[in-house]
Structure formats: structure tokens, C-alpha cells
Image (cartoon, rainbow over all chains, first blue to last red; front, side, top):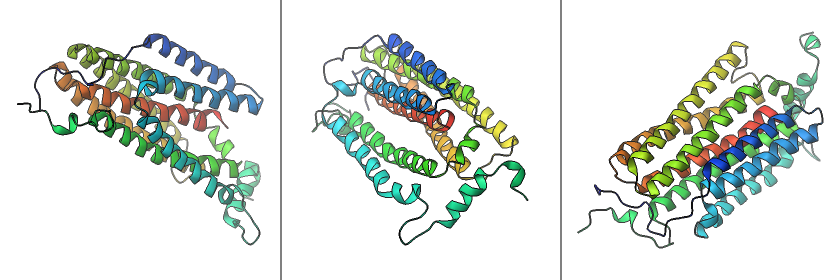
Amino acid sequence: MISEAQPMISEAHIHHPNYVKIWAILVVLLMVSLLGSMSSIRSVVLIAAFGVALTKTYLVTTNFMHVNVEKRWVPYLMGIFLAFMVILFAAVAPDVMKHSGLRWSNDAAKHAVESGMQPASTKHE
Amino acid sequence: MSTRPISNTRSVTGIPSARLITWWVIASEIVIFGGLLATYVMHNLGHPEWRAAAMHTNTWLGALNTFVLLTSSLSAVLAFKAADTLDGAKAAKFLRLTALGGTIFLVIKGIEWTREIHEGFVLSSGGFWSFYYVLTGLHGLHVLAGMIILLVVAADAAKNRELQRVECIGLYWHFVDIVWIFLFPLLYIAR
């Protein structure tokens, strides 16, 4: 172990953007998602929530994590693992989101939906 | 003769090994949280009754926690900036502020969980609540682990030692922030 100050990276020092300004933008985006959540139109709520989440993620990864100036291995690595997530979703989602198919039926899920959608007053009758 | 561990200097990819390993940790975390979030989304889409359960989560407390984590991310990146100029004392100060942000986050989360449990919403109250407690609980454990590492790194940074670690723990902390950026709309807004 070393006992004196060393630069954390052997490369040239990176350019530091105005981090406080980035943080202020992130906070404004948080307020936008909160305002969106008050809408009675579901598509507005979802676009505000996930559009803002994706924008915030972009701002954090590029400005705070400096992925944009990182070696190309890093975005490749992240992309591969994100692709695994998409493959998982695409492969499993049809069976999970639907509760019946050609030769199968998920009766437990159907029952859960039916009992969950009943008004509270009729649930225990 | 240098006594620096070879793992911190060897760099086949052009990225210092400590930072490369941090990226690998984040990649494995993407699979863990990504898998859980993808599973939650597909179940949520197949269970419209979960929307009623999700109405019981407190959007304002979730938003407050988002603000706290975003602010702690700011202090983490300011610690990195200070470490980049070899100002260990300043980096340590910002790292401790980041850990304080983590503490506030966990306290708010604890208040939220207590309130929900008192209202009768526990792990076994239904599919939504199972996912809610597992997702927020696992995320909370990551916050706790991050806080411990932040304080250890801060102790060294205060003595101007091992400043390369400031960037690594910062990367991890930003990732934990990004996970919450997705948990917030999924559990508190999209219902």
C-alpha cells in the first residue's frame, strides 16, 4: 500500500462540468415527474415518470459517472448486461403477462386478478 | 521500489484495474436489479389489481428520498473532483456528506416501512408488496454497504491516501442512485 497522495487515475485529468448545475437540472426533472404524477391521464403520468427517469439516468451516467469519456469497453460492458435484461424480459414476459395460452392456464393468477379487482365490500361474502 | 499493489497499476484495457473492477461490479448489479425490475414490470402488467395496492405508497416520501439521493450523488462527484486535484481532506468531507445523505435516506425509508407495516401491508400482503419490500430492501442494503465503504474511503482520503478509491466508490454510489431513479416511478408514480 502507498502512504502518500496519488492521482486516482493514470490518465489525463478529466474535464469537470458544473456539477451543481447538473444537480439543479436533476431536481427540476424530479419536480416534473411529480407534476406529471398528478395528471388524470395515465399516458401523461407514464411518459412523465419514465421519460424523466431515462433523462435523469443519462445525465447521471454522462456527467457524474463520465461514461461518455470512459474507454469504449465500459459502454460495451454495460450494453451487454442491459441486453441480458431485455432478453430475460422478452423470453419470460409473454408467459407472465398472459394468464392463459393454447394448452395452459394460470388459474392462480386469474383468481388473484379477479379477487383483487372486486370491490372491498364483496371480497369476504 | 513501489509498494503499490499490481492490481492498481496493471491496465490491459486502458482503464485502471480498480475502476475496471468497479464497472464489473456495476455490470453484475445491473443483472441483479435489472432482473428484479423486469420481473416486477411484467408481473405488474399482468396484474391490474396491483394498482390499488400501489396507491398506498407515499409519493412525497419517495420524492423526498429521490432528492436526498440526488444530492448525495452531487457530494460524491464533488469528492471525486477534490480527489482529482489531490485535495484529500476536501474529498473526505464530501464523502462523509454523501454517507450522511445515505443515512437520511435510510431513516426516511424506515419511517415509510413502519407506516406501511402499521397499516397492515407486509411482505405477505400480496404480489405488489412482496416486490416492494424486496426491491426497496435490497436497494437499502446497497445504500448501507455504500455508506460503510464511503466512511472507510473517507478515513484514508483525509490522510491523502488511496485517493483512486474516491472515484470507485463514487461510481458505485451513482449506480445506487440510478436504481432508485427507476424504483421511484415504478413503485410510487406508475399506478
